[in-house]
Image (tube, rainbow, N blue to C red; front, side, top):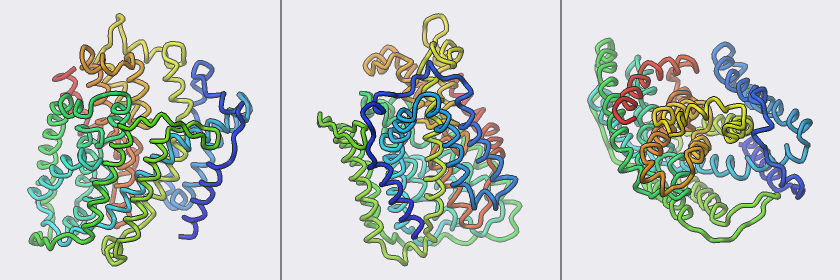
Length: 466
């Protein structure tokens, strides 16, 4: 706990340090960056994938230092090339505008969900697991993929505690509850919330993504039922009976509902007031959103019975791991996003040309390229980049170019499930499951699962809708 407090104080001190006016005028220009600048990001991804597999003990003890090293491998050469003021500006900008709101939301949802205990458990049979996954898929668009994952993963772990073969269950849980289920509202997944802030109507995803989401969810649930039926037949033990005894910590359900409400209300509020924090301009509503979410997280922590946390085997380690790894990811993806944002004038010009072959948007290409990049980059800024590459006019994109926006939205949300780093809940679920002594696939083994299972489902979306 002491280390957690020290980290928080250091982060606060960094954010409050002053930034010169000249630094604030030097953003990254993707036209000035070659592909060599993405090497630190590639190195970080390979470290997450490789070291956790070949040297798990070393990785677990040092992943924070390794992540900081890769961030420095970008920032130091960048400062030497473009000026230390520019490097400092990029670091502070990504912390204040992107990282702190991101990790605050995740931490608040994680804390609130950790204070809710669904007493008793299901039997862990195939039928109950399928119903659980289907219910979680629907819930994800109401309280967000992170909230749904943190609320439901512990009961699912208890329900399947008697089983030896459960890896597939956690993988499909990430696929469905952590990603696919968040496609029907701006509250479900960050890319759609970004679209909402850009002017996309709140219920546009509900209408236009219902078909693709229903198709993918149905296919995955059928495949899961088949795989789980086979796995269940190989179990030696008999399943226990379902035993539900109510909800403990029900007040935190109100917090889980209040958090997305705060996000929704502040997203619709245009105060016209700009605050300058450490040299970075921030809209008042963005600051209020982050502070409001943080306050709800603290409230959830304060009024939760410690016994509830203990029964849930609550630990800060999963959120600590996500916080450290995604701090490095947010810093190291700066040049990658800048290169993509430069369009045809940047090093990613061939990709941009593929999107608009013949001068017209190719919806299939938007779906696949947005999705594949979202599987290794943060899917919210990736969505925004392709939103702008498609013209950036929300009215046009919702009407005559609706299929293009549909492709961008589906790609960003769905394909966040392709890797552990494609969406924050993926890593959090992995951390919770392993903390409970259950096995999860390695980084590359998870990708093998996603290519095998999700690949055909996404191909079906392509053939049906794009």
